[in-house]
Amino acid sequence: MLDDETFQRGLRTGVRNAEGRFLKILAEHPELEQLARMVEKAKKEVISKIDYYIDMAMKSLERVHARAYLVHTAEEARETVLRIVGSRKLVIFSKSMVAEELKLREALEEAGNEVWETDMGELLIQLSGGKPMHTTAPAIHMSRFEAAKLLSKKLGIRLSENPTPEEIVSAVRDILRDKFVRADVGISGGNALAADSGSIVLVENEGNIRLVTGLPPVHIAIMGVEKIVPTLQHALAAAIVQAAWAGLYPPTYINVISGPSSTSDIERKRVYGAHGPREVHVVLVDNGRVRAARHEVLSEQLKCIRCGRCQWECPVWQQTANVWGGPAYGGPMGIGWTAITLGVKEAAELSMLCLSCGRCDEVCPVRVPLSSIIRWLKRQYASSLDKG
Image (cartoon, rainbow, N blue to C red; front, side):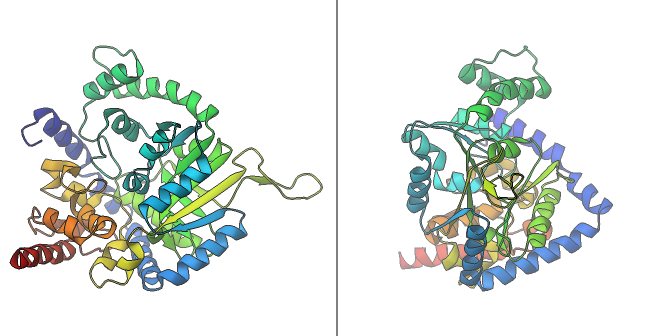
């Protein structure tokens, strides 16, 4: 990968285009720092009482007629979603790192479903058979020429010899429109879940999340339990902070979903299943998170809102992207997430590539002490060698 000039050129272009955008946003909107402190405090509160807030969130989801599931392992999560979806369905995804963690798309395909990613970058990753190279910019390592070549080969899309990003986006839009309209099931992640109201909050720019969660008759939201925050106000703040620190402020859309679509326009009787989904299922994923909430070091990682700001700043990530990391998560934040979801042993060896410069700590909006987490993992690795 270090010798792959195409990969390195794509990564350099992405980093260069992202640089400066974050500082400009924060300079023009100093109020965002206050929102970040609000989110940090809310995340700490939930992590310290994780069982209490999971219970509250599940009761609130049921109150708004969503069906709530708490699953403890990746296998249990896949089985739960497969039971809801079944087989021979057309399933559309919006981008979700938890789905990536669970290998959910692959499981649905193996069960005989037709599955499409609808986020532009994540669709390129699906077609390439690779892994996301950044949490909010999964295809950051691809140039427009590589993207066009891939789309032409896999989807038969005809593009000009010197395709512009606008031309590529327009061609993909035409193909995905049909999938949006015909889909049986839409699967999304979630930026936050309000424990008090059972509202899911999602932030985006493409508009695909609105269609994934609004058009099919069934919507499944799959979220880590650390996405729970006490109130809807906190959930909206988390979405705004995520967008700002991802360099995409103001976001084009913020979606709030509180149960299935409904109407009470006829005789004031509430009927569920109007123009949007008739069913909303929310799968809350533990997969090591509850145990981490009680861990002195790893509990700090659960504050992460996965904006990916630490990845842009990291000198190692700027050379490797998410090749440095576990199967789903990469870069500074990815090492901690790998420890939580796959185990300390898996992450400890990966941690040795960190330069301990601390730049990730400086840019994290919710002050996750990433370098301290990685330093602890390095000690675990060294200790394992001593025992060896």
